[in-house]
Structures are given as structure tokens and as C-alpha cells.
Length: 109
Image (tube, rainbow, N blue to C red; front, side, top):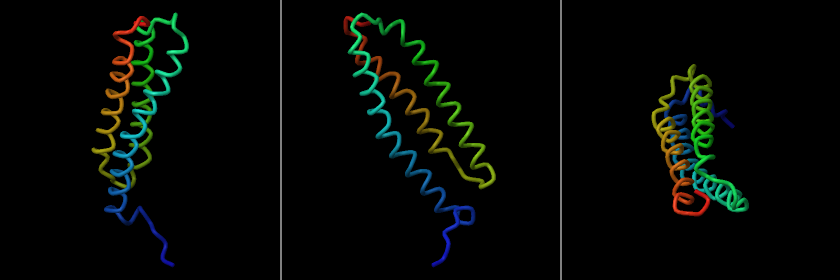
């Protein structure tokens, strides 16, 4: 059986990265929102308006760390990570705005 080498197969690498980016954004954002909403609904005295700046900041830090690590990892492969990086940006905004949406009209805001 012939070994499959992503380093020498750029189209396969692009396909895998683009597929991962799209599927991960579609699945991870709603799951993240659901988990955070579920947990914070258990603490009705917690004001989400005071917590949201931390969610904005720490989610942004996480996205930037992921962006830098992926860029460094795939630098030698000359991979075009445009769709992957765009999906990170979409994930950030969907997540933080989704969390905000659930709490902005509630008593916890």
C-alpha cells in the first residue's frame, strides 16, 4: 500500500483543511454556546454583562493562539489557510454574539 504524504499532495492538504474548517465551525460554535448557556443559567445571580468582557477577551486570545499555531505548523507546507483563518473569525463572532443573544434580554444581564 502506498503511503499518503500530505507534504507532497497540496490539493489533498487544502481539501482536508477546508473541510475541517467548515465542519468544525458549524459544530463547535453551537456546542460552545450551549455549554456556556447551560452552565451560566445554573448561576442566576451572576450578571452576564460583567462576565461578557472576559468571554470576549479570552475567546479572542484562544482564537489568536490557534491562528498562530496553525500558521506555524503549516508554514513549511505552503498551505493556503484562508478558509481556515476565516472560519476562526466566524467562530469567534458566532460564539460571542450567540452567548450575548441568550442573555441580553434575561434577568442575568
